[in-house]
Length: 302
Image (cartoon, rainbow, N blue to C red):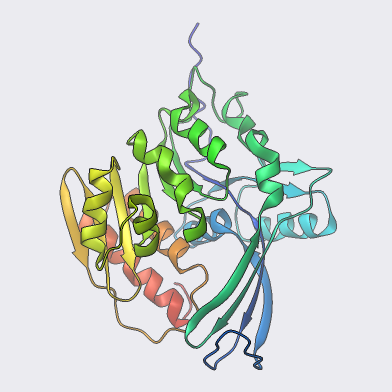
């Protein structure tokens, strides 16, 4: 007998890194070896977390699928997620793996350096996906039918499995690399023409093994490589959304940059939220660019 889909499941899942962001920011320009005064903050972060927080600000209630340790930092992180309106019921809590962390240094001239310690998420592997196969959120016979925001902090083998898995066959997949260094991990979604891919110009170049000077050229090259649909951003210059229906390129609002970490995640989440609300392609892209510009300017997000 065919199992019915879980109609009580959350409308959107955010799968990937949920960790503590430790960010040092200086109001002055910095170079390699710079030692500047500034502020150091610790906030809930990670690609999946950043996307989920933005979705919550747009009125959605995302559920997180990730690995969080059963250490004091993990307990604190789970509590923070709850206060932000995020569903933590399906998170894998490991006894042995510590809670992941991300550390970055930013100056007035942008990101200087960053290190992402997502080793626990990688070690947890497919354990974080159990709710999609054990019936809690879905199964191979009755796959989850909502939206999925997926980040590239998962291992290449797990992302390859997701791209081919029957458990994701009915999902509206939205995928982003965690960083240019992990862009290659999105290749299974190119080869299988699965999902909507969100990348910046550098990441598009890595996936296409080419150099691009603008977002539209990069987006069309990714379609030629097999992408079903792609959004390519190029900082403050342009952004392109492209699929078989054609390409739309827009320029973002001009703002003074106060922060950069999390801007791409904000763009992706705002675009997902706009389309979930019924916006057409151009309106959704405009909304995403506006949200990202507001974010990097340091203004309140909404």
